[in-house]
Image 1 (cartoon, rainbow, N blue to C red):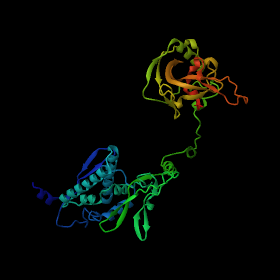
Image 2 (cartoon, rainbow, N blue to C red):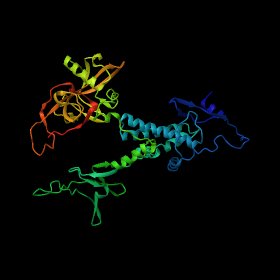
Image 3 (cartoon, one colour):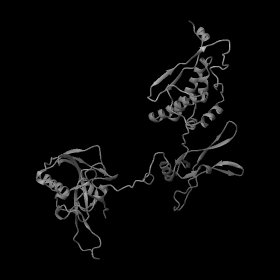
Image 4 (cartoon, helix red, strand yellow):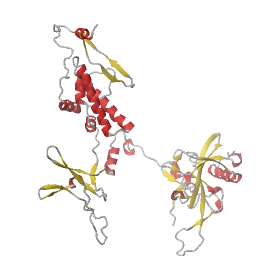
Length: 438
């Protein structure tokens, strides 16, 4: 049977492609009844209520923008032809914009793709226009620029302030200030910034801010040579707090309590046994080295564990000698470094309540120290494996020199350290703050 005979016998509605919620593709072909020269008894045709004939691009686009929010496309679409067309266009434009973002496609390339898809729909519509003008209407309403695509999806991107930048001295100007009126004619403005005002001969920059363009209709336009877009921090925070689903502690009625590891940085050690093996607030770097403790270090670390867990017997602890060594880590978002990563690292100078004279563990007075590196050591306590993070610290010695005035300030020797002892292993939860080197 030839194609012309098929067209004479049955009327075919357009072949439409829809996505489902499970991201599968479905093809639906709906066949109408056999055409007849006599009108039906109901007096209505199968295309009653269709608005495909409306080819005015601006009117149709305005109707789509004013309609309700677009729902997710369904495998079997329902509703009017306008809703079907809007679902297909929304699905198509969303795909193009997401595809541009994921694959780093330029704006010009994306607009060329939109124009090509529009011409393709026009060609398909011309071929099958005897059956339906559905493809022609889709092509007429498909956005061809990123501006019209974002407007169709109600995406607002012009929420920033655009400035004109001087290409020589980088001074900022408002866009309305790049042209001046000189005796009834408009001329481009030059930069009036004085880069060196204290010079013997101060000179203005004098660089051109815009270039003149004559349009086809004879109008003159001035376009900035360089621009800079900015958005204030206050506006950004307002947009962040206005996002749906963002609940604050006041709205939810919950009281935000300070974490226990913050309270562990000072004060006595009793009652804080569960904190030392809690590594959830600690972020480690990706790279580390394996190390091995010598006998002296194992003995000192055994004393530290006995201080952290008073209820256990130190002699019963089976301490592994292997550990992971790190150059830096972060505790509650605060980054700490070490001299292993950088010799004069400012993030390695810390103050903690941990060390007394001769390297004895005594959580009393705050004392400055310099972190050499970090280790993560694991052992079995009370039948369960627990990991602990320690900072290996060189503690500064207190200066015995009398500076007068009653020694109101505590002075410490910059290059003289306490004797190495158990206090060398400092739990990172006990780090109180940084100190500045005079």
